[in-house]
Image 1 (tube, rainbow, N blue to C red):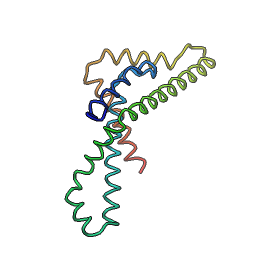
Image 2: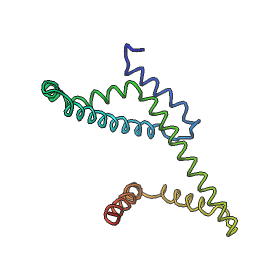
Image 3: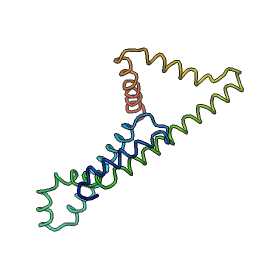
Image 4: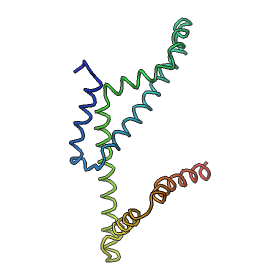
Length: 164
């Protein structure tokens, strides 16, 4: 088990791939990438807290010794987190994605039901989403890129310039 912790963690993470149907997740790379970004962020935050604590409360010798190795601290912490808890964080993000999918599905279903009672049309929101996804599948790659990355960028820029 601990002879080769990287391959041990890799096997544990790949074992989670069999649970994709249980969580109704189509791609295994999404929770893995989310977990990787979360571990990197957490590693930098923890190293920042440790660095601040040593600088504020350490002696001159500790600060001098620490200043030689401070650039390696995030790498050490991130490596430890990958080996220790990566599969648990991937599983947590799988639960998170499942919860978000369920909430979105239930809210669309609820809105469709309300509109159906009001107008008599069958699933107007779901049919618009289906037509948009079919239209998007027929578009070239650059149009998909613009829609997937351009629209969120427009909303972010609007939020930055108009809400501050």
